[in-house]
Image 1: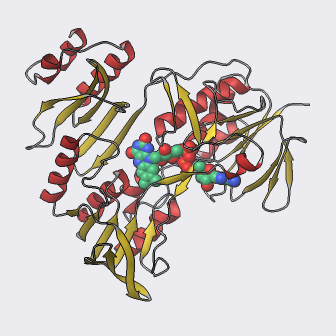
Image 2: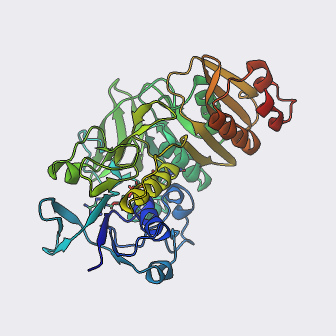
Image 3: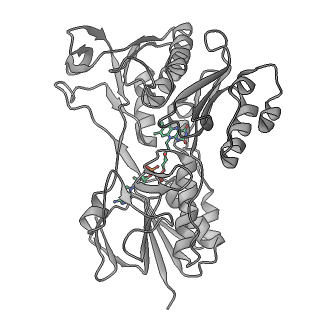
Length: 406
Ligand code: FAD
C-alpha cells in the first residue's frame, strides 16, 4: 500500500510542503488539511489589497488545478483535534480518523488577543485570515476614526491602507517607538516621520487598558488615563504559535514546536515547518521562531526532503518585507545583538535609505527601504559572511554592487 503523508495546516508552509513532496519524489498519498474554508492563499495582501472591495477572492498560492494535477487531496474546513502517535492516526473535529505514515505540522500562529475591559464591544478587530480582512473591509466602509493598537508591521501596514481610504488613523504603541522589537531607532524614526507626513497620528508609550462604548467601541482608554476616540479599532499585538496539538501529542514545545535542522521533531515520522516551529539556524548560531513567508517556504522544503528520506539541513539567512504607501522595506538577516548601525542615505528626509547592522565589523542584517539593489547585495554579503568597511557601505555615491568588494 502507498504511504500517506498528512499535512496539518493549509497555508504558506503546508501548501509548499505538499508541492515540495512531489518535487522531491514522494509517490505516496498526500492529504493537506486546513481549518479555513479556502484553498491556501497569500496572507501579506490581507493588510493591503484585500481591503479593496474590488478584490473578490484571496490571492491563491496555487490554482486549484495544481492540487488535482499533483494528486494532493485538500481537505478544507477541517480541523485536526487530536494526534494518536501510537496508532499513527489524526482525529478530526467531525469525528473521523485518518491514518498517516508521515505527519507534518504547519499549524502556523493565531493572533494574540487583548483581554481588557470592553474587549467584547463591537467594532474591535484582529487580522490574520481572509475572513478577518473581509470583516475589516466592511467596517472601514462606514468608519471614520480608526485606532490601531500596536506599532509593529501589521499596525503600520494597516495604518497606511486605512489612511489611503481617507480614515483618520491613530496608532497607539506601548513602547517608546514603533517597530522597537525589530529595528534600530533610526528606522523607527523614519517610519514615524513618513506616517506623520501621510496624516497618521502615532502615539508611543501608550498602553491600552480599556475599551469604552455602548454596544460598539467609542473610545480607547490608556493606562495613563488618556482617551482616544474610535469607531473602529484593530489590534495588532503579535501572534501565538499553534502548538497545543503537538504538545498534547507529547512533542517538545518551547515557543514553537521544537525541531532540528532537518525540520524533524523527536518523532522520526513527524516534521514541522513555518510560524509554528522553534528551529536552529546554523548561519545565526541560535534557535529561533520566525514569522515570515520566506521561512515558511524554506522550512517546508527542508521538511519535505526529510519526509522523503533525503535530509538536508536548513541553512538560510532570514529575510522579510513590508509594504507601506510607496515604500518597500526589505530586510535581510537577523539584527539580534548588533553593536553598530551604519546608515546609507538620509533617513530624516525622503523615502529611501539603508540601515546596515554590524556585529564586530561583520554584517548581520540590513533594512533596505526602496533600495532593491542594496537588498540583493546585503543577501550576498550575508551569504559570504564577510566583514564590511563601514565607510564604504555608508557612501551613497558608490554603486551598490561595489560593496561586494568592500
Ligand atoms: P499560517 O499562515 O498561520 O497557516 C497555518 C494554517 O494552519 C492556518 O490556515 C490555520 O487555520 C491552520 N491550522 C492551524 N491549526 C489547525 C488544525 N488543528 N487543523 C487544521 N488546520 C489548522 N510575512 C512576510 O514574510 N512578509 C509580509 O509582508 C507579511 N505580511 C503579513 C501581513 C498580514 C496581514 C499577516 C496576517 C501576515 C503577514 N506575514 C508576512 C506573515 C506570514 O503571513 C506568515 O509568516 C505565514 O503565513 C506563515 O505561514 P504558515 O503556513 O507557517 O502559518
